[in-house]
Length: 196
Image (cartoon, rainbow, N blue to C red):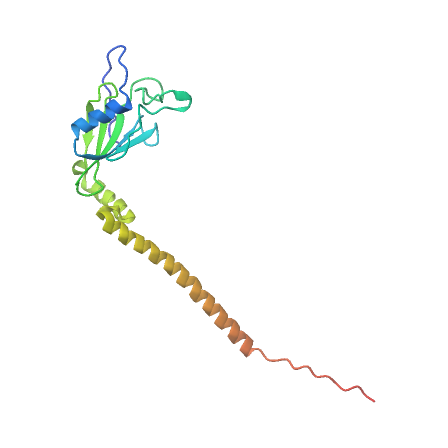
């Protein structure tokens, strides 16, 4: 069962959607302990343009632009169908959050920057928490640097196992060839002397 869609309140006539900088500022005001902010304009996954801001990085100046210099329709607050405005999806990672991969998902009103929906790791049901842990345990991100180091060593171990498998197979093949050569009967050529 999918979650109900977040509806954007009807904007005032002539209202223009906020730009990238204003949306980031609205998020920073609500969540001052942010470490990384990712913004996706448009409705679903893979739609729209994704931008990110991290502490210590320079943010892009102005709203994202499509080819030809025009802002994508999602950044202007329009849906792909051109009808009702779509919320702006924002994912925020906060400093010192636990688990380390936990993030807060926000749906913002593109015209006011108001939060229409907020969902954090604490709001997930048990099944979703387990799935989230499994994904980040698999990539090693669950426990920060130590987890990534363990995942890297496991990956290196997998590569070594492939190499040792090929090496053992090659050695067995060579030993088999030697046995075959040693066990084959030697053929001696007999030459008869010509009759005189």
